[in-house]
Image (cartoon, rainbow, N blue to C red; front, side, top):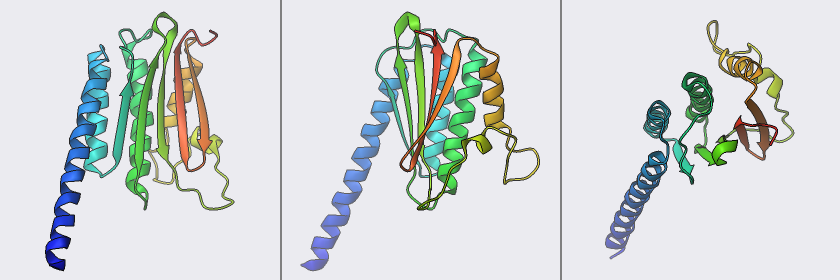
Amino acid sequence: MAQDNNELKNYISKITKHSHSLLSNQVDLLSLERISNLPLKSLILSKILTARAKNISFYLEVEKPLKHLFLNDTVIIRIVSILLDNAIEYGANSHNDSHVVLLIDNYEELGYDIVIENDIDLKDNETFSLEKWFTLYTSKGEGHGIGLNSVKGIINNETNLSLNVEIIKQRIRFTLMVGDTNA
């Protein structure tokens, strides 16, 4: 009887996980449909699949259709790619369950925000240096550590881009603001 009960619990757990996965995939697909730019849509889908292959949960939300990028596609795609790569890499190297969130908040003709948020492992009283992230710092060796520095350079050269970085508890949030950043 106890064994039957445990088998039933395991079965229900598997079904629940599978249902959650299907629902999550459905939400992601609905959100992806709201992005008109095929290269950006393809990039995001690729990063979702990469994260999930590394057992990192990925949540995507795009409430309003995003029809125009306002800038050269490659500028936005380069920045989003770097930020998502960093979030996924951090999650893959974490010892805890990891989550990546990507939100796109569209303000129609004024522009839009792309928010990328992921978990970080901060010990008690540990300080976190954002400056270190935006320099050519790396712990991986030569040829690495240029991603966020590249993002900083791109943003400094574009008038319709700005980046806000916040640390909230055990999460880091990058908000890329595209369009009229003075509105």
